[in-house]
Length: 294
Image (cartoon, rainbow, N blue to C red):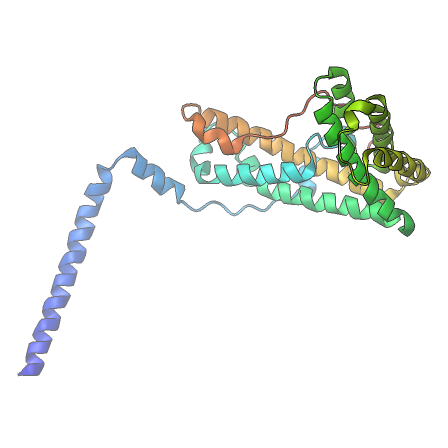
């Protein structure tokens, strides 16, 4: 008797479950049909994105030859972070952005381009370090540290002197050894021309010692400049880094342009798509572009 009761209960439970299932499936289309457009947008946003394979070599072949000799206008670490941020911000809207007149592959490959740039920059740094005499490697690191300190101090202390600021914007360019030597010499000259202003800055080892040390290191490293410029491994790595940078800029400009239009009525949504770095008054590469750039 008890078993019969149990069977009856189970059958009733199954019947109720089927009824619930049928009711849900029957009513669901109606509820979705009269839902808001916001619901449709949510559904579209969770639509899986296509798997994209980025062919770096193919992308590089599409660039102009002179791009290889144009150094980054924005520090590599910064533009890599910005590209990753923009890619993340745009990704949820990708399926609707593609309906606009845009090269959607630039959005789909933006993050991969940023990673390629970061890797190529590491290769460039390693190539430069590898050809430098072991005893000079600590000097180069010290020179780069002094350059950063002197440049930061000069940009602040002389911020009301446009002509000096124009010189300082050029100092930020280039990252080859001869660039570093030239930058140190320029910064030393500027610091010595404004002793009263620089006297208040607490530079490593003391202001005057730091300035004298920068000049000393620049002189010692100057003899190595010509060797780096003619080192095949260094120059090849530099050209690849510059090309990867151009690929990131190309994609960033397109994604930002699409985003500005897409969010034209929602300016608050544009914040993740902006840049914190302002390029102004800079020169281009200090390397002479060869007749046949490679």
